[in-house]
Image 1 (cartoon, rainbow, N blue to C red):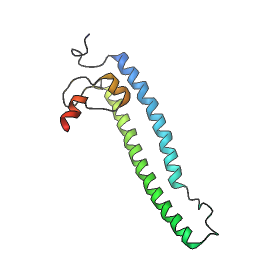
Image 2: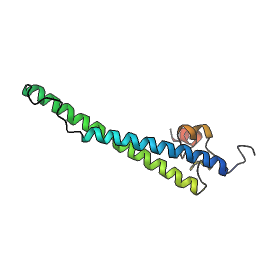
Image 3: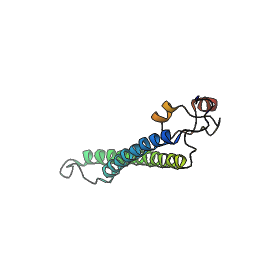
Image 4: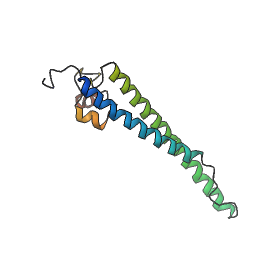
Length: 127
C-alpha cells in the first residue's frame, strides 16, 4: 500500500511504535526520579562552618537550582503524559494521524518524536 493512500498505520507498525513509546516512558520516569531526588536533596554541601557570606551565596544558588530542577520535573511530567496519550491513540488506532491535515505523520518523525500529533506540513503552517 502506498504511504499516501493509507489512512492509518497497520497493527504491526502500531505495535512497533507502542514498544518504542513504552521504552521512552520508562526512561523518562527514571529521569524524573533523578530530577526529583536532586531537588529534594537537603544537603548543605558542608557550608555549616564557612563564612556567612559564602553560605548566603550557596543558599541562593541552591534555591535557583531547585527552581530549575522543579521546571525540569514539570517538563518531564508533561513529556510522560504526552507519551501516555500517544499510547491511548495507539489503542484507538488513531496514532500517527495528523490532527490538522488528517494525513499520516512520517514514520521517521514519529520515531524521533513519538508523541507528535502534527505532521511537518501542519507544523510549518503554524509558523
